[in-house]
Structures are given as structure tokens and as C-alpha cells.
Image 1 (cartoon, rainbow, N blue to C red):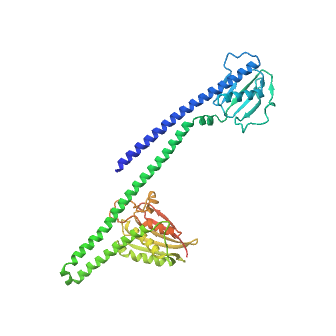
Image 2: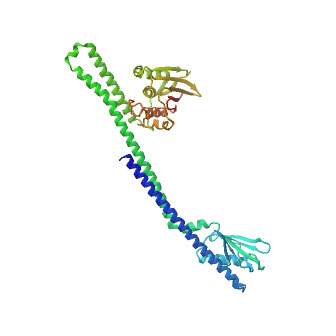
Image 3: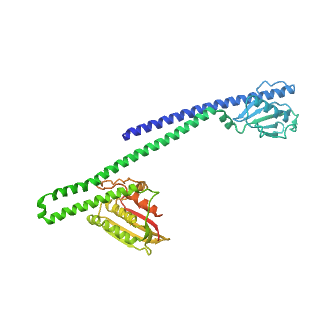
Length: 422
């Protein structure tokens, strides 16, 4: 599938999900407001009936204006201007609320209009298990007619939300769908990236194998000429070419098979006491020919007083071979490589510094991923599988060590290896 097609599908899917979310939020808000209005009407009706019962008990005429005032979203005031029995008030409030299925806890207070202060207040739990046990029959009574009472619902929002069971369920389902969509999108993009990386790997591997195979085929064709026997120097030259190209092909195959057999959690190490300075010398011999062809130089600063570690010699040699090989390949000028070793806080530190093209900050973490290759700008002849640094990181981690990178574009790179002294 083409990249533009994937982008179009992703954008269309995101817009669709966003539209559904906006619609859900809008209707949820509408439903919430509807439930809030219904709750207010139920509370107002219940309080109105409570006020009327007080008027009837005291044989007082009902006021011309509605005695109920809603001062805030969850606070109501009832103006009765009549004597108030707190015991009776609490009983009537609970009774009227229960009739209208208002099971929310509430607070009420009785106010003295003359002194402008609250003279009594109480919290009422509608849940029978939480209901106070020693209030009935002991609440005060006021006979002054300049009193009114207020009722507040501290948990009104949660009460309304609990009434919206269907909407809460649909919102939960939508949330699950969004999470699933995001995860599916992540997997699709990841698989697309892996597909592209693997495609690049196959292309790189084809080019890596094609050159030595072609060279061997050409040399073999020349050797088939019977006249070549009469030219010993030419015969030796083509035989040497075949041998070198065969070794090159063997190394590439071994590198691919090596990475295919390694797993981050199952790296088998044959540890022994090894001198890291000797290992570096061995790795330098492996890249000597390539270094000579590029007119490169190596500056060795072997300052470590204790260069010994417990490790797998073969893997450690391959680690330095990969680092040196990259330092030679990824540069626009004759390679200049500086290798420094020293001891620090019980660790053996090895720094491999080059004068290559450098690596941007965005690429620092990616370069250790399998098959990943840093874009090389104007350099188009750099070959490789994108396995070297992944292998280096894998082996250093298996040795309980640490690998750090310091690099900027155009300023080269420095790989720092921290290993435990043996």
C-alpha cells in the first residue's frame, strides 16, 4: 500500500473518530443538562410540598409568590416566615425526597432572619446504613416567625451522572473503541515501518552479495582460459581476487547469521579473562586493508592501567570491528580514528572517536535498532545491513556494560563503552 494512501486512511479515520467524540460530548452534555433540569424540578416540587405542609400545620395562608429560590446549582432556599420544628422539617424533607426518588445525601440549615445567622444545621444521609441513629425527637424547635431554611446537595454532579447509566455506558464503549483504534493504528504504522526496513535490508543484502559474486564469476571466467597457465602472475592475481571476495562474502553471511541467531534475552557468552588492548589490536588487523585503501590513520591512547575484563573474546572483537568498520565507511575524507582506554570508578572505559559525517540527535536512539541505517546525505555508496550497531549494543548489554554515543552532524562520532574490570 502506498504511503499517501495510508496517510489518507489515517487522516480520514482520525477525523471520523474526532467527529464521533465531539458528537458524543455534545449529546452527553445535553443529557446531563436535561437530567439536571429534571433534578431541579423534582427538588423544587418536594420543597414546595414541604413548605405547604408547614403552612397547613400553622394555619397560615400560602404566599402569592413561589417561596422556593435556587441560589446556585445545588443550593435551594425556602421562605416560609413561620415557626420551624427541626425534627418535623427533617422528616418532611426525607419523605418528600424519597417520594421523588431523590436518594442523594443533603444538608439543611435553619436561618434567623432577625439576627441574620444560621441557628441550626445538619447533614442527612439518605442511605439507611449511614443514617444517624440519635437525632429523632431531640431536634430543636423555633417559634419565631422570622425563620427560613435552606437545602444543599453537596454531591449533585455525581448524583446526576449516576442517573445517566446508558450515557455513561456508551461513553465507556466509545473510550474503549478509541483506545483500540489508537493501538491498531500504532501497530499498523509499526508494521509498515518494519516492512520498509526489511525491504531496505533485502535490497542492501542483494547489493552486498552481488558485487563479490560478480567479481568471482568474472575471475573464474578468466581462469577458464587455458592460456592463463602461461601467465603465473596473472593466475595468482585472479586466484587472490577470488579468495578475497570469498572471504568478504563469508563475512557478510556470518554477520547476517550471527544476528539471526542472537536474541537480546538469550545471548550465550563464553567468558574468559581477556586483555582489551589485545582485542583492539586484533580488530584493527581485520580492518587494516580497508583503512589502507582509504588512506586512514589510527591514534591509539591505551591509558588503562587495568585493561582486563571477563568477556566473550569473539563477540568483543566483533564489537570493535563493527565500530571501526563504521568509522571507515561513514566519512567523506580519509578516516582518522582515535581509540582511548582508561579506568574510571572500577570500570574500563573505551572511547572510539572518528571524523565521520556524524549523527543527529534524532537518530541517536534509532541507530541501535535492527536494520536501521542513518541517512548518509550525499554519500550513496555506503553499504551495509543496518545490523552492526544493533549487534554492538546487544553484546555490550549482555556483558552488563553500557554504551553511550556523542555525535553531531559534520563533527564525527564518539562511542563510549563502559565494561566491568575483570
